[in-house]
Image 1 (cartoon, one colour):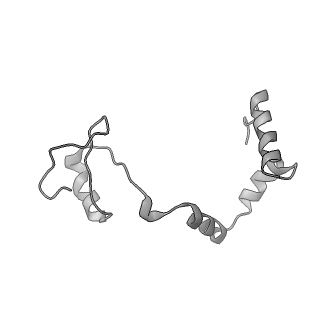
Image 2 (spheres, one colour):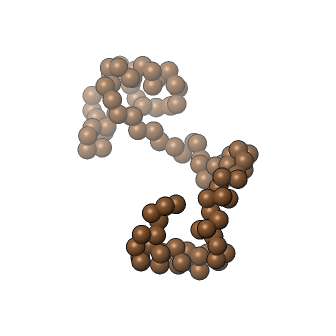
Length: 97
């Protein structure tokens, strides 16, 4: 976590987190070793509580002629086309949603 406490404000925020969340005084000193000690089942369980697959949205940017068929093959659901400003595009190819 090198560089995390380069300013007085950063140190203040870390101390504030320790106090606000009732963390042990050595929370940040032991953080890296605790993360390194995690096993895959622990990480998987934690991910299940915060990542909700059905609510995910993927944004794909690229040459539509080159990537569209591959994206369709994935079968992730509807494809919606937006322009550079995030506005729905009126023109779509046959079979597009």
